[in-house]
View 1: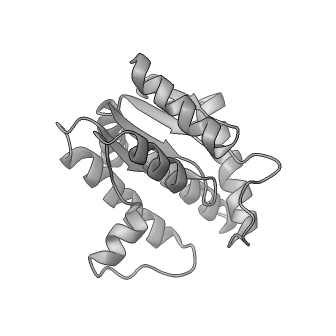
View 2: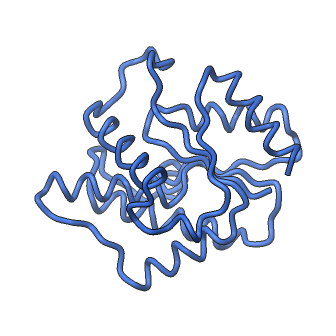
Length: 184
């Protein structure tokens, strides 16, 4: 299966992926676009910016689309993450972010290659005990992702593959993801 994990920063995406891949050795994990770009020497802003998230969205699309035939791959983040961040940041700037027609076609094409999208909403109490950077942005992006996925505010649900929201402890999430994969 081709799986993407989506959620705001500090929601447990990377932890879920690492734990899942440790238990499912036939799966390959991709790195989060921010860190992949950093390893390639592409400097992104330390602060959350529209430019930085636009670059990460582009990289996420490229990663998903160029891995087209690979099965048993799990992506750390997907275009949904970056679309939510871009909408929240542009709203804070008094603007409205909307993907161009060409970008929207690429996003739809990327989604069509995925078999499963896992959404990790923020939970209470928060399992993350460390201080999280940009807590307001984190919460706003979580709310925006919920609107996108629960209310179809972008009109994408008809092109999205199966989308499942996972909550619970990190062990519960790994078990639930493993069960979804085994039943596919």
